[in-house]
Image 1 (tube, rainbow, N blue to C red):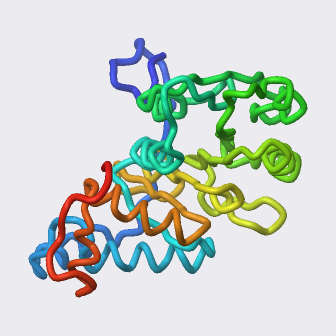
Image 2: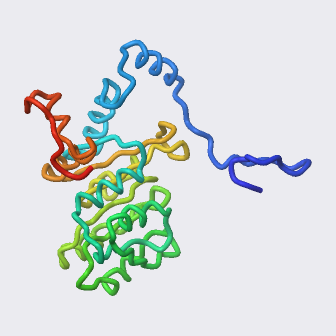
Image 3: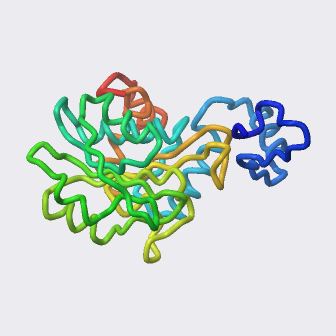
Length: 243
Protein backbone atom coordinates (compact mmCIF):
# COMPACT_ATOMS: atom_id res chain seq x y z
CA UNK A 1 0.00 0.00 0.00
CA UNK A 2 1.39 3.38 -0.97
CA UNK A 3 2.05 6.00 1.71
CA UNK A 4 -0.60 8.60 2.56
CA UNK A 5 -3.37 6.73 0.71
CA UNK A 6 -2.87 8.72 -2.49
CA UNK A 7 -4.01 5.79 -4.60
CA UNK A 8 -7.24 3.83 -4.16
CA UNK A 9 -6.80 0.86 -1.81
CA UNK A 10 -7.68 -2.65 -2.81
CA UNK A 11 -11.29 -3.59 -2.21
CA UNK A 12 -11.85 -4.19 1.49
CA UNK A 13 -8.38 -2.90 2.47
CA UNK A 14 -7.94 -0.49 5.37
CA UNK A 15 -5.92 2.64 4.65
CA UNK A 16 -3.41 3.49 7.37
CA UNK A 17 -2.45 7.17 7.00
CA UNK A 18 1.25 7.91 6.82
CA UNK A 19 0.64 10.78 9.23
CA UNK A 20 -2.13 12.95 10.61
CA UNK A 21 -1.14 16.63 10.74
CA UNK A 22 -1.77 18.09 14.19
CA UNK A 23 -3.98 21.18 14.27
CA UNK A 24 -4.72 23.37 17.29
CA UNK A 25 -7.91 24.93 15.92
CA UNK A 26 -6.35 28.41 15.91
CA UNK A 27 -4.92 28.23 12.40
CA UNK A 28 -7.74 29.96 10.50
CA UNK A 29 -7.93 32.69 13.14
CA UNK A 30 -4.21 33.38 12.75
CA UNK A 31 -4.49 33.44 8.96
CA UNK A 32 -7.30 35.99 9.31
CA UNK A 33 -5.12 38.15 11.59
CA UNK A 34 -2.23 38.02 9.08
CA UNK A 35 -4.60 39.02 6.29
CA UNK A 36 -6.06 41.85 8.36
CA UNK A 37 -2.72 43.38 9.34
CA UNK A 38 -1.58 43.26 5.71
CA UNK A 39 1.75 41.59 6.48
CA UNK A 40 1.66 38.38 4.45
CA UNK A 41 5.40 38.06 3.79
CA UNK A 42 7.97 36.84 6.27
CA UNK A 43 9.30 38.62 9.35
CA UNK A 44 5.91 39.95 10.37
CA UNK A 45 4.31 39.70 13.83
CA UNK A 46 3.90 35.92 13.70
CA UNK A 47 7.50 35.38 12.58
CA UNK A 48 8.69 37.48 15.51
CA UNK A 49 6.53 35.45 17.89
CA UNK A 50 7.98 32.21 16.51
CA UNK A 51 11.56 33.47 16.87
CA UNK A 52 10.91 34.54 20.46
CA UNK A 53 9.30 31.19 21.28
CA UNK A 54 12.16 29.21 19.77
CA UNK A 55 14.80 31.31 21.53
CA UNK A 56 13.03 30.90 24.87
CA UNK A 57 12.51 27.15 24.43
CA UNK A 58 15.95 26.29 23.10
CA UNK A 59 18.28 28.93 24.53
CA UNK A 60 19.81 29.47 21.08
CA UNK A 61 21.65 32.72 20.35
CA UNK A 62 19.36 33.11 17.36
CA UNK A 63 16.50 31.20 15.78
CA UNK A 64 15.64 31.97 12.18
CA UNK A 65 12.57 30.62 10.42
CA UNK A 66 13.20 29.19 6.96
CA UNK A 67 10.94 27.77 4.29
CA UNK A 68 12.17 24.25 5.08
CA UNK A 69 14.63 22.25 7.15
CA UNK A 70 16.49 21.72 3.87
CA UNK A 71 16.99 25.49 3.59
CA UNK A 72 18.26 25.61 7.18
CA UNK A 73 20.81 22.89 6.40
CA UNK A 74 21.89 24.74 3.26
CA UNK A 75 22.41 27.88 5.36
CA UNK A 76 24.48 25.84 7.81
CA UNK A 77 26.70 24.65 4.95
CA UNK A 78 27.21 28.27 3.84
CA UNK A 79 28.06 29.34 7.38
CA UNK A 80 30.80 26.68 7.56
CA UNK A 81 32.50 28.17 4.46
CA UNK A 82 32.90 24.74 2.90
CA UNK A 83 34.90 24.49 -0.32
CA UNK A 84 34.98 21.75 -2.97
CA UNK A 85 36.72 18.67 -1.65
CA UNK A 86 35.90 19.25 2.01
CA UNK A 87 34.38 16.20 3.68
CA UNK A 88 31.35 16.07 5.95
CA UNK A 89 30.64 12.95 8.00
CA UNK A 90 26.98 11.95 8.27
CA UNK A 91 24.83 8.85 8.84
CA UNK A 92 24.19 6.46 5.98
CA UNK A 93 20.49 6.38 6.88
CA UNK A 94 18.90 9.81 6.41
CA UNK A 95 16.84 11.97 4.06
CA UNK A 96 18.58 13.30 0.94
CA UNK A 97 18.59 16.90 2.23
CA UNK A 98 21.24 16.01 4.80
CA UNK A 99 23.78 15.30 2.08
CA UNK A 100 22.46 17.64 -0.63
CA UNK A 101 22.96 20.71 1.56
CA UNK A 102 26.71 20.06 1.67
CA UNK A 103 27.07 18.65 -1.85
CA UNK A 104 25.74 21.98 -3.16
CA UNK A 105 28.88 23.59 -1.72
CA UNK A 106 31.10 21.01 -3.41
CA UNK A 107 31.68 19.04 -0.22
CA UNK A 108 31.92 15.25 -0.17
CA UNK A 109 29.52 13.33 2.08
CA UNK A 110 31.23 10.57 4.04
CA UNK A 111 28.64 8.06 5.17
CA UNK A 112 29.00 6.25 8.48
CA UNK A 113 26.81 3.29 9.40
CA UNK A 114 24.03 3.64 11.96
CA UNK A 115 23.31 1.86 15.21
CA UNK A 116 20.77 -0.97 15.09
CA UNK A 117 19.03 0.21 18.26
CA UNK A 118 18.43 3.89 17.40
CA UNK A 119 19.15 4.17 13.64
CA UNK A 120 21.37 7.13 14.57
CA UNK A 121 24.97 7.48 13.44
CA UNK A 122 27.21 4.99 15.24
CA UNK A 123 29.46 7.22 17.30
CA UNK A 124 31.99 4.39 17.65
CA UNK A 125 32.66 4.48 13.89
CA UNK A 126 33.04 8.24 13.41
CA UNK A 127 36.70 8.68 14.29
CA UNK A 128 37.82 6.09 11.74
CA UNK A 129 36.08 8.10 9.01
CA UNK A 130 37.98 11.33 9.74
CA UNK A 131 40.62 12.40 7.22
CA UNK A 132 42.70 15.57 6.77
CA UNK A 133 39.86 16.86 4.55
CA UNK A 134 37.10 16.43 7.15
CA UNK A 135 35.49 19.72 8.14
CA UNK A 136 32.31 18.77 9.96
CA UNK A 137 30.09 16.08 11.42
CA UNK A 138 26.38 16.28 10.62
CA UNK A 139 24.33 14.16 12.98
CA UNK A 140 20.68 13.21 12.47
CA UNK A 141 18.47 12.63 15.50
CA UNK A 142 16.27 9.98 13.93
CA UNK A 143 12.63 9.96 15.06
CA UNK A 144 13.47 12.48 17.78
CA UNK A 145 15.88 10.09 19.53
CA UNK A 146 19.13 11.84 20.36
CA UNK A 147 22.50 10.75 19.08
CA UNK A 148 25.23 10.16 21.68
CA UNK A 149 26.21 13.80 21.70
CA UNK A 150 28.80 13.76 24.50
CA UNK A 151 30.92 11.30 22.56
CA UNK A 152 30.37 13.04 19.22
CA UNK A 153 31.16 16.50 20.59
CA UNK A 154 34.33 15.16 22.21
CA UNK A 155 35.45 13.67 18.88
CA UNK A 156 34.73 16.95 17.11
CA UNK A 157 36.68 18.92 19.71
CA UNK A 158 39.71 16.62 19.40
CA UNK A 159 39.82 17.08 15.64
CA UNK A 160 38.68 20.71 15.37
CA UNK A 161 35.46 19.86 13.53
CA UNK A 162 32.15 21.70 13.42
CA UNK A 163 28.99 19.84 14.44
CA UNK A 164 25.69 20.38 12.64
CA UNK A 165 22.52 18.80 14.03
CA UNK A 166 19.83 17.73 11.58
CA UNK A 167 17.07 17.82 14.18
CA UNK A 168 14.26 17.77 11.61
CA UNK A 169 12.41 15.22 13.72
CA UNK A 170 13.70 16.42 17.07
CA UNK A 171 11.84 19.57 18.09
CA UNK A 172 11.08 19.50 21.85
CA UNK A 173 13.34 16.45 22.29
CA UNK A 174 16.34 16.77 24.59
CA UNK A 175 19.70 15.22 25.36
CA UNK A 176 20.48 15.30 29.08
CA UNK A 177 18.10 18.22 29.46
CA UNK A 178 19.40 20.23 26.50
CA UNK A 179 17.18 20.77 23.42
CA UNK A 180 18.24 18.96 20.27
CA UNK A 181 19.60 21.38 17.72
CA UNK A 182 21.49 23.41 20.33
CA UNK A 183 24.33 21.08 21.30
CA UNK A 184 26.37 21.48 18.13
CA UNK A 185 27.42 24.66 16.37
CA UNK A 186 24.26 24.81 14.25
CA UNK A 187 20.93 23.01 14.26
CA UNK A 188 18.11 22.59 11.77
CA UNK A 189 14.44 21.95 12.61
CA UNK A 190 11.51 20.97 10.39
CA UNK A 191 7.87 22.04 10.52
CA UNK A 192 6.80 19.87 7.58
CA UNK A 193 3.29 18.43 7.90
CA UNK A 194 4.75 15.05 8.94
CA UNK A 195 6.44 16.52 12.02
CA UNK A 196 5.17 17.16 15.56
CA UNK A 197 4.79 20.93 15.10
CA UNK A 198 3.78 21.91 11.59
CA UNK A 199 3.37 24.84 9.24
CA UNK A 200 2.68 22.84 6.10
CA UNK A 201 6.25 23.39 5.00
CA UNK A 202 8.82 25.26 7.04
CA UNK A 203 11.94 24.96 9.15
CA UNK A 204 14.31 26.86 11.39
CA UNK A 205 18.03 27.34 11.84
CA UNK A 206 19.35 27.45 15.41
CA UNK A 207 22.68 29.22 16.04
CA UNK A 208 24.67 28.58 19.18
CA UNK A 209 26.96 31.61 19.01
CA UNK A 210 26.45 35.25 18.09
CA UNK A 211 28.94 35.23 15.21
CA UNK A 212 27.01 32.57 13.33
CA UNK A 213 23.75 34.29 14.23
CA UNK A 214 24.77 37.62 12.70
CA UNK A 215 25.94 36.08 9.44
CA UNK A 216 22.98 33.68 9.28
CA UNK A 217 20.63 36.65 9.30
CA UNK A 218 22.47 38.09 6.29
CA UNK A 219 22.42 34.79 4.40
CA UNK A 220 18.70 34.44 5.11
CA UNK A 221 18.17 37.92 3.62
CA UNK A 222 19.73 36.77 0.32
CA UNK A 223 23.14 38.05 1.32
CA UNK A 224 21.99 41.56 2.25
CA UNK A 225 21.96 43.51 5.51
CA UNK A 226 18.25 44.26 5.01
CA UNK A 227 17.36 43.26 8.59
CA UNK A 228 19.83 45.80 9.97
CA UNK A 229 18.22 48.45 7.76
CA UNK A 230 14.77 47.73 9.17
CA UNK A 231 16.20 47.99 12.70
CA UNK A 232 17.64 51.41 11.86
CA UNK A 233 21.26 50.24 12.17
CA UNK A 234 22.20 51.31 8.62
CA UNK A 235 20.76 54.04 6.39
CA UNK A 236 20.36 51.69 3.41
CA UNK A 237 20.83 48.01 2.78
CA UNK A 238 23.10 46.34 0.27
CA UNK A 239 24.60 43.01 -0.76
CA UNK A 240 27.34 41.99 1.68
CA UNK A 241 27.63 38.18 1.48
CA UNK A 242 26.35 35.08 -0.24
CA UNK A 243 22.74 34.17 0.39
